[in-house]
Length: 70
Image (cartoon, rainbow, N blue to C red):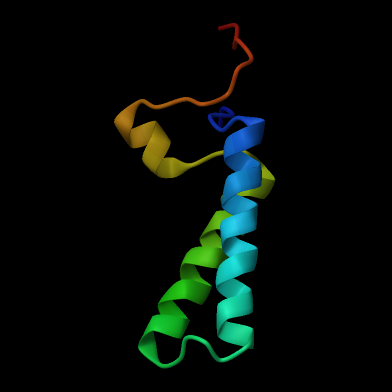
């Protein structure tokens, strides 16, 4: 698994995940939307930690600034 997420992308995803979690925690969002937000937040945190986004791989995107040698 190659890294395909840059530092800024990782930080933005992490902050969005925290914001979604806070919206659910403070009952600003509830019901089905809350579960969807928590699922997306979990995916964002996981992809931020491993620096790999499967959708980026499918679409050939790469926000990582380091060059990979083959």
